[in-house]
Length: 190
Length: 190
DNA sequence: TGCTAATGAGAGGTAATAAA
DNA sequence: TTTATTACCTCTCATTAGCA
Image 1: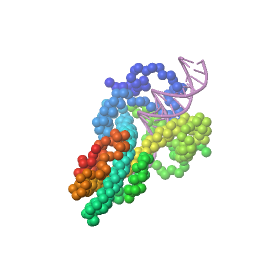
Image 2 (image 1 turned 135 degrees about the vertical axis):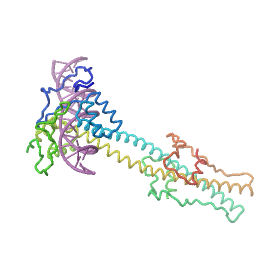
Image 3 (image 1 turned 180 degrees about the vertical axis):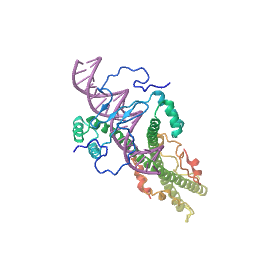
Image 4 (image 1 turned 90 degrees about the vertical axis):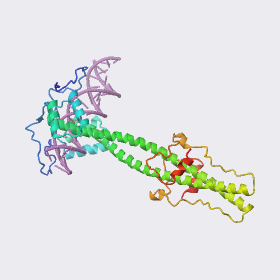
């Protein structure tokens, strides 16, 4: 069943109000451009679409076969595929963007969470350090003149921050912890 | 200066190889589509472009003025602006995407850095805890039967992670620290 | 020559507005 | 209110030019 170059594709057309008085057979502007375009029929597009999802690349053979099956010019088929690829590319971009966007949002939240965690732990470390000092002092005053504690608060030798040039950048963020934790930032920043 | 419906636009034209063998006045395909299009000249496009960056919206007044200045149909000007807006929108999307992409990349690096920091501090805390336990034990065995230490490792009351539903999600990441630090994850995870 | 990118323009849909 | 106009948007098809 060949479609007959639908102006009214399908069959059910509510009488749309005409909006411009196209005199006869085509509009022509100041540049003398004459232009008539027919949309492809539903069936034509369907078959092209199926053919596209099957394989977005179009070899000459398939192009000619499709063209004769659809009653189209082979070049029309080629053009359709080209435009279809462009559309697909654009759509992909939109999708990737929204995906990346949500990833980014959750990354920001997670960073905030991690920064909070870091601050929290620095506070804990400070407390532990104080406690150790207190215990050491107490022990030294009471009995032993010489301490045997081997504990030290120095950092481990490996620090990723130095690898990525992140030193001191810990808190230059959109989110900001505006409470007592800020006290510890300056205390512990290295 | 009116451009005369340029086939050879402007005046400085390196001899373009003609490729379309449009017999006479237009190509027609199997669907009876007739279509002729002329590119706008350099000067026309330039003026339109300048007008666009000045203001992407086109009021009727400006449209008519531009049309007469360029020797174009007002509708051509309108169409040009319409297409220009669409192109601009698409280009914006591309730009935003690459921007977001680099943001995302640095966020990943930063997260890795923060996670490393967290692990490092957990190790330190573990060491401190052990030291405290050792000191307390030592003190209790030596002299005082009753401990007076008030230190505890419990967390601060406020935890942002709970606000954002991040509990337990600390380490479900792309990057993974595959060394001894992993031992401490289960120890301190809450 | 084939593909891609850029571009021009038609078709239909929609919203705002003016006229009947 | 209904109807007609108008502008704008999205989608679509086609052309042109540059690259390989």
